[in-house]
Length: 262
Image (cartoon, rainbow, N blue to C red; front, side, top):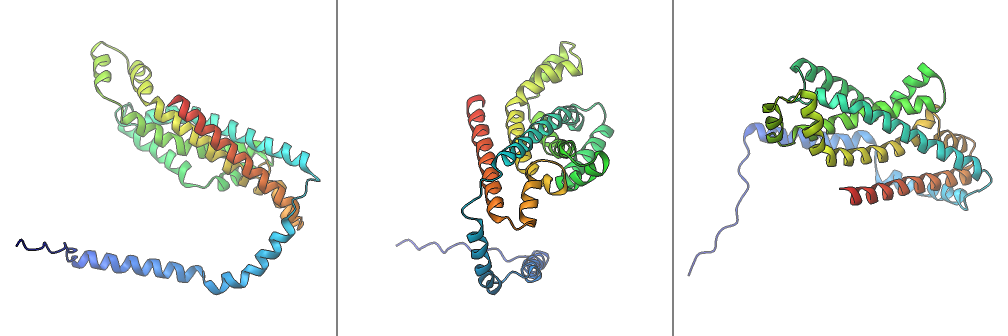
């Protein structure tokens, strides 16, 4: 009778691997301890959460018209910021792609700029542009433009790098210029991925534009901030529902476009 195979066991970790595992476990445990999250606090906070929910419903429709206008302004900010960011992302992506950039120095410098745009939160960019151009939607559009550039340029460059090299080499052998190769071979191949990234950028900008109003960068965020500060929780509920519907519509429309084009 054949012997039953023994179950495979984990390999004994090396001293370094064991130390890393212990360090990771300690970091996770200390993170929960430092955050102060506890079941006791959650249970004690439930009555306050229930009172807040009771004050929010039914939602107020007293200021429905200005809320809808602010919501429209929020979406317009998202569209303008996304388009500007995508336009800037294309040349930056070309310079950041090692196989397309004219020199490695351009690759490192461009990737550093894109990393800076991506690392700094859009809320910080909004504060910077509020200081630079003043309160209003212009600051929000500029903040979304920078945030979109940091997001899209990276993925545009990766999509270009993943295109097939054969068509490039064929065009190069025929004497095509660098720009001709990029716009005749690279970008058409990378276009599906770039469209996908562009749609995700619009979704991201729509959600981000709501928060920017909290620092005076225009849009419905300022309406939500005022309602919460004035304890008009029923009005705040109306704004939250409007924001939810806007984000849901944009995501559904983006999915529909993605399914039709890609």
